[in-house]
Amino acid sequence: MSQVCKLPTKRSGPPKVWKVVELKKKNEEKPIKFTIQEIPEDRYEEVVEHMCTYFIADEPMCKCINGQNDPEYVDGFRQLWRECLKDGLAVAAFTDHPNGGKPILAGVNVLTLTFEGKETDPNTVKSKQGRILMEVLTNLCKKANVFDKYGVNKYMNAYGLSVHPSYRGAALGAYLLNTRVDIGREYNIAVTSTGFTSPISQKLAERCGFETLVEENYEDMVHEDGSPYFPGIESKSLKIMARRLD
Image (cartoon, rainbow, N blue to C red; front, side):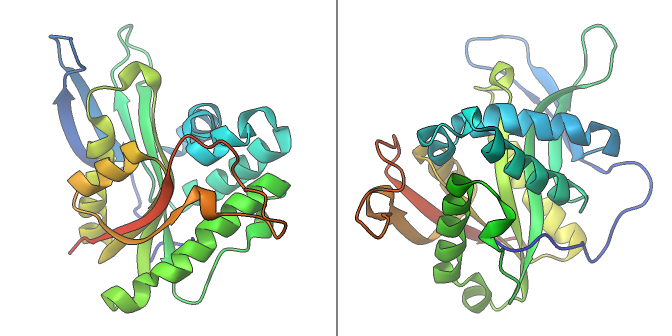
């Protein structure tokens, strides 16, 4: 991971729509239309609360350490996501409200840029457990060495992808992930790389053309006294995965 950085090009005007797709949930006949787009500023806090509610509850490391019930842990990531959204790079999927109200937030991928030589300081997340998670990600990203492997000085990173439970089972996550190709070409970002923390997200990334750069089993992540960082975690490993976008 890296510190949050400003985009080289910040779009003016209304949020850009990247794609409109119609998808069917499993065992349902009627498709749902989703608009995948940049996130309007007046929806930022809703996106942040979505991540605090659903991403922290579902992501294996967060779930293992019961982050959702630690106010300091949640607040640390709330601040991180707020800073990421200021870049204007993140994308969300919206669907029409049946009563004609504002579009419903169905999913989000919080994106930012990582620049060579500008690593994240894990202490930006104040809770002890939050710092451990950030240190794990930061150290594994260093091992992946995206810059040398792909010959770039920046890449598109992410601080979480989440789909609302009501819209899971329609492959929306794959469309959000693949939207990085359109974003990369628009903003001249040649590579994307992210930590994928569960078997489901890792398989999704593989289907979307990502390759594994480095993998570490959770059982090997331990404190100095040998006790595990994530005791009883339900997933096997963390993978740093990447793909070219150009």
